Structure formats: structure tokens, C-alpha cells
Image 1 (cartoon, rainbow, N blue to C red):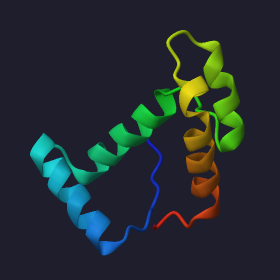
Image 2: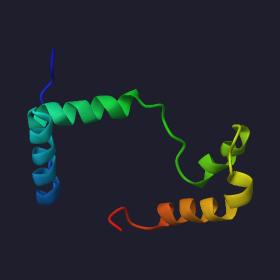
Image 3: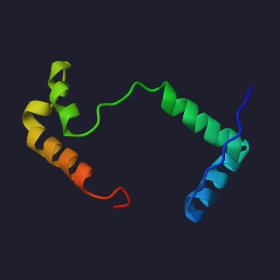
Image 4: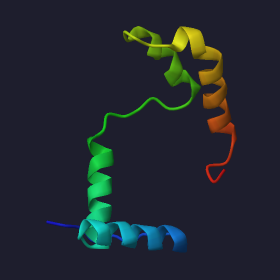
Length: 84
């Protein structure tokens, strides 16, 4: 069973989404369903600067050599508006 919902998109985003759906040969609604499904299937990524501090636990991480840049980028991302 599907539930009906309504969303609002900026005109440019709507145009681009319709074009992408057409490239894929699906309706806009199907394209958006696939995007939502793909996003929900991903593990939740840590948000903000606090997510950086667990990166060093994996092997092959370059956090030790680039930590200052990564922290700066994370802090900027939290401070700057999303439409940057």
C-alpha cells in the first residue's frame, strides 16, 4: 500500500528532477520514491563536527594528517546556510 504525500520544490529543482526521471524512464513520483528509499537504506551518518572524532578508529584514515582542515570544514558546514 502506498500513502499519498505532497511536497514543494523550487522550480529549478523540479525541472531537473523531472529531467532526471525522464532520463531514467520513470515518473517523477517513482524517481522521488527511489531517492527516499536509497536515503533510508543508508546508515545514519554522524552529523556535525562531533562525527569527525570517530574517523581515526578505522584503518587507512588520514584524519591525523588532515584533522584541522576536516574540523574547519565541519564547523563551517554547521555555521553557513545550506544554500551557500
